[in-house]
Image 1: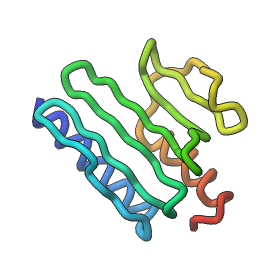
Image 2: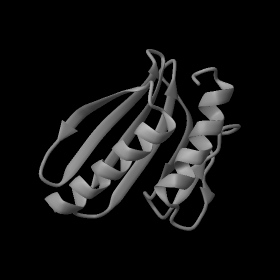
Image 3: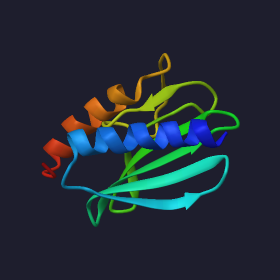
Image 4: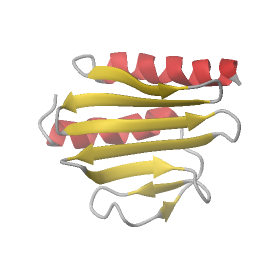
Length: 114
C-alpha cells in the first residue's frame, strides 16, 4: 500500500515540477493507504488530489473561489467533470495522470496562472 501511494505521490510531484514549477504543493493528509495533496496556483485557485491505494480511488478537482471548475475521478467508473459544466459526468477510459495535467495546463493558463 505504501509503495503504491509513494509511487503516485512521486508521479504527481514530478508532473507538478514539469508543468507548474511556480506552484506550491502541500500535503494535506497522509496515511498508510491514502494521500491528499493540494497544488496552489493562487490562493483562490488550487488542485485537490486524492489517492487511496487500497481501492485505487483517484480524484483530481480544480477549485476556484471554493467551487469545483474541472475534475477527473474514478468514483463509479472513470469520468471527467468538464470545465464548461463541472457537475456533468463524461465517461472516459482510465486516463493517464498526464492527460489530466494537460487539461489543467490549458485551463490554468487560460485562468492566468502561467
